Length: 85
Image 1 (cartoon, rainbow, N blue to C red):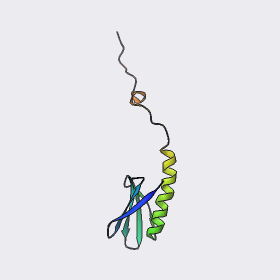
Image 2 (image 1 turned 45 degrees about the vertical axis):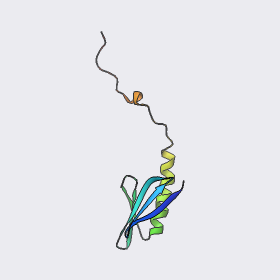
Image 3 (image 1 turned 30 degrees about the horizontal axis):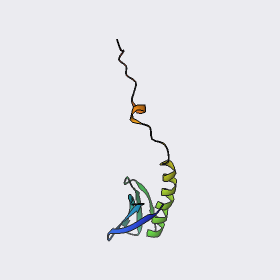
Image 4 (image 1 turned 135 degrees about the vertical axis):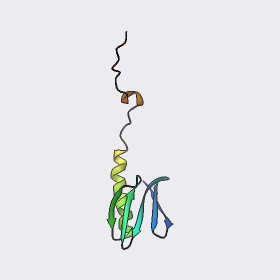
């Protein structure tokens, strides 16, 4: 898992993991607010390096959850309530 950071603005840092968007850090005064790839707030940190480290630790636990097998569209369909004649 390789996280790359780029400064998008003077107060915003964007992370990509293996070429895909992973989240961002917004600087708000003295705090650094970390958000995941769905823009959900993950926490506030005293420094940019602490926020970056937190995303890496969140990313390690999230990547394990992404290993689950996805169900096919057919298996997600609800059974029909109509009776065949």
